[in-house]
Image 1: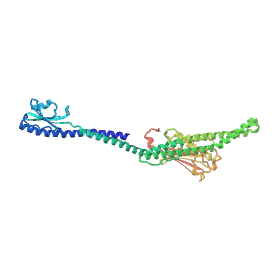
Image 2: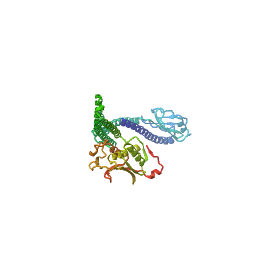
Image 3: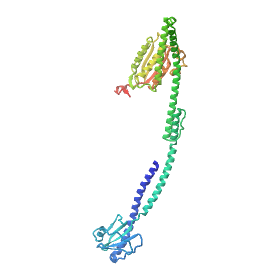
Image 4: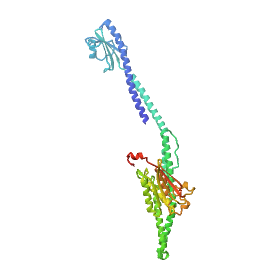
Length: 453
């Protein structure tokens, strides 16, 4: 419809312009012919006089002539149709009051084009009936051509539009199919060109990302269910034991004070483990690290605060700090959680007489954080999977934890454009190292805004 409308408007404008040009051309040609005929008649009138000059007989169509005397009277050939009355301008020409040559640019009421020329004390006039038939014929031809162009344009436009939008139709059908079946495995054929091909590739990339996200959610749910099974089972059995003994009225006799204390301690530890696991699962389930704004901050302050919190959670774990101020661009709470997980992980392995060492320094354009312990270290076979979710080495299965702490560290570090690695401490234990992009001192001294929204 758009193509047909555009062609119709183009044909209409072309018809208007062409009609005006054709009318002007025909009028100019008619005036030139009238001017030439008037000169011939005027020459005869000069030699024979206006009253005696012989007027050519009317040929039956086409040119008409007459002589205008100074008093306004006229002479016309016998049998010639009557011309319109002599205009005042023509009388002035006959009386010599105006220029010798006066041409009428407009047709009069009877549709004649009249040319007046001063001659022999009066004037001669040659006229021609205005003929619109060439323009009408031209207009009819343009109308037929325009209709043909509109029809052809509509058909061609429809064919081109359908061919060009066919990939969009298939893309729409595929999107509807995915919406109804929830099947993200159906890739859309990469066809078309230009923007359409780019759109199809973008949607295929989106489907691939959704597939990866669904797979990650499925694995997270499966791993979470597996990890929750053991503490929930243990918690349920202990609670059922207490309920059964209480119903029998044998709670005090069946369990000694020491056994009750140990059982209650186990229940509390299991509840803490479940709470920690739930919090870590919530952190992993969120699509981003947090809703915090990114700030320019001293990473040393974050490390000190995280170590202090770790000390309140595990007072028996000693931490040796060696930090220097290093500025980074990051989210304070997320970075604190990552440092806390590193210290907690090291605290599980470090012997009671050996402190966990936490070091922070600037190294080139990076802020380097190292946390090492004097424990048994990490086996070479376990190093590639240390940061995987729920992964726990065989030697760590008896220790508390969910296997999510280092996975959260990896995600936080990745979100800040850094890198987390595992090595061996000089003391024989594990050495966990985090490299984050540091902020140059020049940016801090420039006095820029320290909050990025």
